[in-house]
Length: 615
Ligand SMILES: [Cu+2]
Image (cartoon, rainbow, N blue to C red; front, side, top):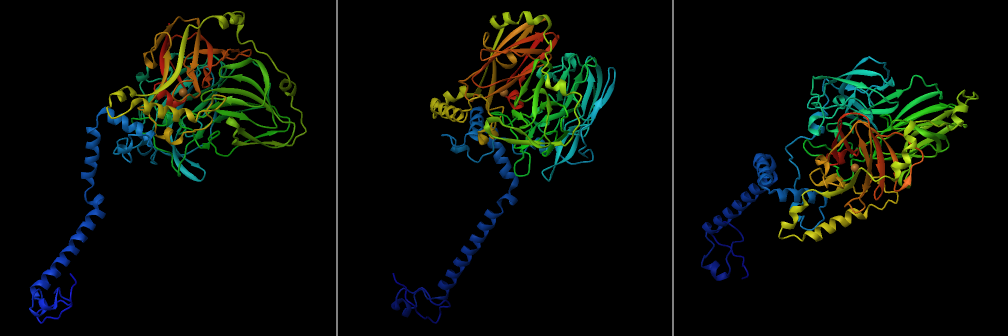
């Protein structure tokens, strides 16, 4: 009904709400009572709106506890199936049935990350120091301290972890056969750690494996000193790193090199350098969090986006024209394989993990998987600058720069460099090798993966299990189309970042018994030669390469995908590309309880490890 303006003597509001001239004349609804009531309603509405707005805007400040308790309670009340589903949906948010988990935390947000807990700048933190080269002899003792350091990477300061304040830690040079006592002191609050001497056939008691992984020591806590006695029976380039939360500690800088030489050997190069290849993941100026109880990036491993060679993002090496330099290459990255090359510079492959190759050979490039080591000699006839790079997957990644300064001197090792020497690394074993090539394997391991706890999915009435599985499997296969069976980059960034050791299960399966991971408990006689067949399952949900490492022993790679290896070297780590197989012959020479595992560190924590015994 159209409202009509009216003027009433008693009415204080204008216009008042008379609906007709008649009402106005009869003074209906034009009383001051009516007008005041209307004003009161308007005022009340205004106050109500203001209160609601204040409560809504400041709800987080006014009721913080209530909200957190609600969140925690909802997590506690989740069934195991729902918790698992939440984890899966974190990896694959676009999958069907994942709407309900969108934007909800997959982990306990009240718990600090390892970054927040440990990487704190305090009075124990020092500025990072240059890596020292330490010459040791048989019987020496050496103090090794695990400590926090401040390190500037691309202009930003990070708190990192180190051995003796440097990244890499000290390079220890020692003669073959030497026994050294390391007094390992931990100064890092909230960190309990061990040191594993990788590639060293030492007494298993000092292998640095904690008891919960089947080892012989307790992790070293803050303030504790652990005496670790290491004997080095082999020449070569070995390294040391933690065996606790290595995904975190190794990424943050805990690694160093052992260079073990034969004192009886004559020198054949002008100079030597250690080149430690690594990468570190930095996103938006920070190192993505490591969680306390959960290991992340388990799908592919934590690939870094910042190359980190000898602890530098700007690695340089200088030699003179004609100088013969030996490089000891070590890959300490969590997951990244490198395809190392220095275009324009002559390079000769001399050694591998544990000593020399049978036959030295000229190479242009060299694939180095995590934990592998190689020894190469380089020489340039021309002066100038040469890129040091990785060319994996056809993509060039800069690792640094080699500068060759002009010189007219001729190296006295030039003839040594030009000749391709042979090394007798096998002794009498070389006469038996062909029989091991044809012999059927003593053990067969299948490398595969699944999504942990998928068995429950069939019980979820609202879910078409097969469809979900196929969708996820298809997506995970899609990206893996590298013809060489090697993932040179993290090709599935979001899924990888959100995968954990609770959602992804990497498997080493004994094909004879069907046992997997820590249920495999092999036993061998000391002195036996054991042929192990490693198959990298092409039908796994996400096939990719795995660097397989055995503690305490050395092995030969007999063949790869049936191609007989005609140039052997003793190794402790071998890369098994996706959809390929490798036969290794393990020299079970060193008694004790040992581990074997994938050296993509995140895979180890996602189940890819087992124990074996030599007696
Ligand atoms: Cu692996």
